[in-house]
Amino acid sequence: MYSQLEVIKKASSLIEDKSYIQAKKILLNFFENSKNVKLDIKFYYTLYLVSDGLKETQNAKKYLEKCLRINEKNHIILNNLANIFLKEGNIFKAEKLYLSSYNLKKDYLLVIVNLAILYQNIGMLDKSKKFYKKAIELSPKRISIYFNLSRIDKNFIDENKINYLSNLMKNEKQELSEMSYGFFLLAENERKKKNFLKEINYLEKANKYSFEAMNETNTKTLNYWKNIVTENYKNFKFSNDVKNDPLEKLKPIFIIGLPRSGSTITEVLLSSANKSIKSLGESSIFNGIMAKGFSSKKDTLVNLNFIKDKIKEIFENRNFHPNKRVFIDKSLENFFYIDVILKVFPHALFINTTRNIEDNIFAIFKQSLSKLSWTHSIEDILEYTDNYFKVINYFIKKYPDKIFSLNLEDLTINTEEVSKKLYSFCKLEWSDEILNFNNRKDLLISTASNIQIRDNIKKYDKDKYKPYKDLLKSFSNKYEWLHF
Image 1 (cartoon, one colour):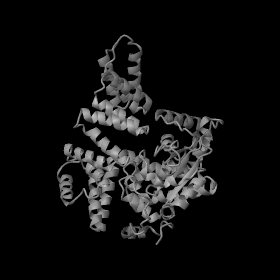
Image 2 (cartoon, rainbow, N blue to C red):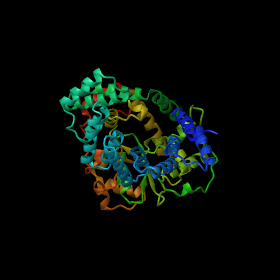
Image 3 (spheres, rainbow, N blue to C red):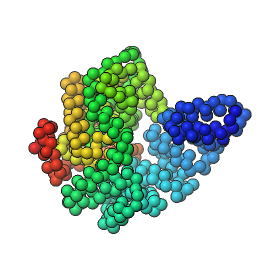
Image 4 (cartoon, helix red, strand yellow):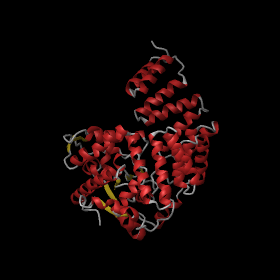
């Protein structure tokens, strides 16, 4: 029989190869057959790593808590446990654990950045700036930290910092993702000077590096968006459609559409209706399940039992239990899966957020959306947008009573009227307090719209993207929905 140390080493090697199931089997087998052995903190931490790799969040949490009982002053364990509580939406517990980790090790860069991001996402911007500045002191060559701080402090990046970052990018080897953030900062600097051609040139480089940073994954998912789901969305066939499943009683609200179209403000307005209405945020539950099972145009059979079981498992892992049947999901790509969603959640409703389409295209291109493979070139954005129009128009005709289109410009001009229509469609009770969402202390926003949402709703700026419109003229013959 292997010793505890040998088991940990063997499991760790398997974890490095992402063979999580084998690693779990070895560890649990040792656990079952070693009742009289005092298990080391490293053993439980290795079990945590396996559970994290398998996305078994509640198990991961359990093993970290066991580690903490052995050593309550381990800054790494405290930080990782905080990450889990944050995923569950427990902001206050996460903050407490992050601060405990930080107080134990004031130069622990990871927890410093995590605290900066947490405070940024809950709107405590002064605290966020403080931790970002600490992070820069510890890691002055990490460009992504400058980028994050520039989002909440528009005056942080001056000419001296631009020169420093430019030299850093030219003379020192940087990760591709760091180069991407650098070019986004250079682009923003040129925008301030109204050098729009230079800005576009830097944006193209920023998006190119962003795509290449995850080239293998992005190439694969881009093919999925272009050639697979776009061919299959109205041809899904269903098996194991068993009725009277508990999920059928739920009444979820799915916010769908293109990024940067007003989806975050819509989510905030809806979640302000009642504290018991929880949001899963950009969970990508359906896309995560569907994309793994569909690798070609011929794949159209959907096993509903499998999908329902996976959703329950994900809910359990995230400790997500809707108190009152209504919950929100803001996975924008779900417009592809409306037929599937309605099979699982027959009472589901969909809010399709929209805005001026040319503005929307440039808002996407100018934002660092590293996790979306189709956002890194104007051509790919246009193709995805064209598919979005085809799909959403198909489903609006098929399910006219299930889909409510909300225009961002209309919302900013007639906020009360439009929000009342939104609430009426969702069968929620509207009140004046809903429009005071910016006063909420529990508002956690991790999207690119985080900073704008902290203010009152501002009137739509029709001229913001005017300098870029000519870049789309060459595509006007290909896409009739472009307006010239």
